[in-house]
Structures are given as C-alpha cells and as structure tokens.
Length: 381
Image (cartoon, rainbow, N blue to C red; front, side, top):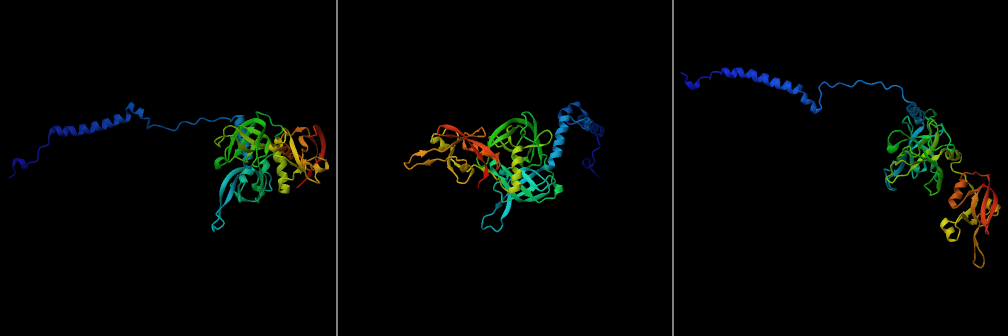
C-alpha cells in the first residue's frame, strides 16, 4: 500500500496558468525588440531596398572628348618589358626575368615601336605587349641615348598594329590640354590629363648631354609611363613622356616629354640606318672645366682639328704648344648660325638639328676678335 511520500504531487493550478502567460510574454518581448524604434540606432534596417537609379543624362563635351581620345589612341599604346638574363656563366637554368617595364607606342604598321632609351637600357631581351594583349619579342632595337629614344622592331601582323597619329610640337602653347597614356606601376592602360605647363625646358639624357626644348606637363607621369605618348586634345602625338621631377620617385605635378618634332626627325633615321648619322665639324673640344682653367670663360675651345674634315677645310685652328713650350689657344666657338655656344654641350645640341650637307656659319673668337667661318657639314666617323 503506497505511503504519502510515494504519491505523485498534484499539479498546482497557479503553475498551469503561468506557463502559457510566460510564453506569451517572451513572444511579446521579442516582437517589441524587433520593431522598437530605438533599434534604429544600430544602423540596421530589415526593410532596406536598393536606391532608385537616376539617369545620367548627356555627357559633357569635355567628358566625351576625353573618352574619344582614349578610345582612339589606346590601341596604339603598348607595354614594354625589359628582360635581363638571370643566371651566371655556369648556370644551366638561365632564364630571362623582368628587369623593368615601361610604355611605348606604335609608330607604323611595319612593327616599329617607339619608347625611351632608359626603358630598354641593359636588356638582354624585350617583350612588347599590344593593346589586344598579344605579345611579341623584339627582333631589333636601335637607340639614341643622347635623346633618350629607342625604336623596337617586332614581327606582328599589320592588323594588330595601330600607328599613333603624329602631330607637331613647335606650335604648342602653354595652357593646352595634354593627355598621357601608359602603364604606371605595371598596371593596365591608364590615362591622365593635364596641361602644357611650360615649354623649352632642359633635362639630362642618360649620357649626360642636355635634351633641350622639352615639354613640361601637369599630366601625371608615374613609373611605367616612361616612353608613352603625350597627346593634345585632338589625340595627336605631341611628345613622349620621359621623366618626372620628384624626390620620392612618384609624380609630384612636374612631368617632362620629348617633343614630337625631335621624335619625327630621329625615328626615321634610326629605322633607315639603325643609328644616328650625325654631321660633325671634325674638332676635339676641351672639357668646360679645362677651358675655364685656361682662361676661356665662354664658348667651346678647340683642342684639335681632325685632318680631312669640314673643320680642317674651313681652316679652323686648334690649340698647340710651340717649340719654346708656349701654349697657344685655338679658336673658341662662341656661336653657330647666330645661336650662342657657351659650353661644349651647346655645340652638340645645335649640330644635332643639322644633317650632312648643311652649310653653317661658325663664329669663333680668334686673336681677340670674332670671326665668322662658313662650314659645310659632312658625315665624319
């Protein structure tokens, strides 16, 4: 017979009433929490929907111009990879690895690509990638370091080559819009816009000689842009981006470009001869410091006149020491065709713009007097 303690406890009437009430209370609290306005402070909105799209409308004339220039010219822009030989003389696994990269542009449909000399300098191989992402190894490379120019020849189908439209640089004006297209930092093609900030600037080439008449632009030129085209608002080539002025190596608002008039003069000669055939006077000049020590404050002092050259035929005089040991200074070239020559690099820069057969007037300082000497330039090895 079960005792009092063995019996099941009888359910409490209060407990049976509280259970459904507690469940309803929990549900009500959950609904209040979900919809309570104070929850908006979390930033969440369960009813969030995409915003309606507003039609853009017609592009501005300036925007459309930018787009047109990029779409027309970008097929002419190429990526240039400078390859170096990785592996010593005893290595059996020598392979070419990227040493540097730059930009270039298609000159003609024969496969000639124009870029900077410093982009291809020291390369044992060069790879050119066209805008359609097809790549071709360089078959030939011709360079003109004094003007930081190089021409690469690739064997590519004509249908893949889109020559750039060539403009002029002699008639540029400060304030004109400029565009630079290139591959900065190895990225895909990008376009930047600026203006012609100044004209007639001078920078140094890889050989130390001055490049004069350089265009200064505010269009951003970063590493990898070197060798790319500088364009005017019509999409014509007006220069080739070549350098920046920046302590950090990144663009700081001052970029430089070689003028297209110089490119259009030098590139055909590189393609024709594989080198620059320069007219020479046939003189050996004193270094500027040496000339200053000898008392020549201005001009280029002639140390030696090479026999059978235009200088010899024009009776230009070199420096010599007589039998008594006395030094006699030679002619000091102070101008060519009226353009002043205050140092030897001025002479090279002026001659750079001439060709064999040109007749020039060389003004020299001789025995305390200025003398004009006519000279016909020839090719002198």
